[in-house]
Image 1: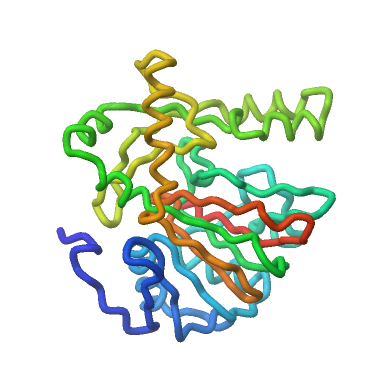
Image 2 (image 1 turned 180 degrees about the vertical axis):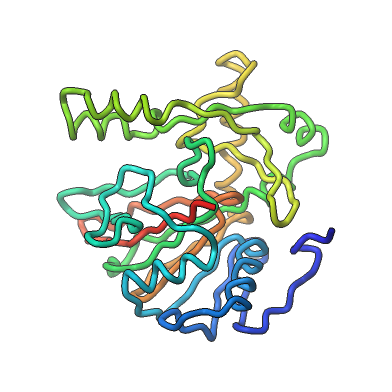
Length: 285
């Protein structure tokens, strides 16, 4: 059966403008305030598999409209990370940085890979945007894997990595939130470390994807710590290659949707003490 990337799909319900030659596309001629029919939703799923991250400009939508639109890509449920939720919309996380809470995900990662079944994708909608700074970058781990030599690819395909949220800074956050350690203990019991292949096959495109990230991957099974650290250091450097990246400058009304199975992203923390606030929804499957 042919895979999507082999079909060079023609989109009939919207216009697609490639963002870079490697990753990303701007979608034109869609009003996300309006319900989308089955054909449009199917084409959007094709577009995200092909381009890995989609950008929608000048979309002025309500929280419920963001939820409804995000359902075009899969199931939407209550989030499974540690961010605060939007009142009356438990599907929406508030990702916010202020002068009092200057926090941004200034590290390369894919979302929630510390779950046994990581999310399919994510939608992120601008609420408050700094006058300058606060960009987000995405990297194609499909392109990163394809850049490696066949012999190295074959070796990586034999390996398994361990992923855990405990190396990401959430441990310190939970201890600040609850000095007794009860919340940390509960989180450890609920979300133990998980294992994923170092190389995964994308279920839609059939392409192989490098699946380790510096925020949540702790080590490679079967290797010594020295060997594991050396190999991971090499692999963690790949998303930093500009040719694999797309960089988005946010603006009011901008919404981004990305394929969490084949990308990593990085929130640039260069805007403090300015205020930055976004609404995030996770596509579970």
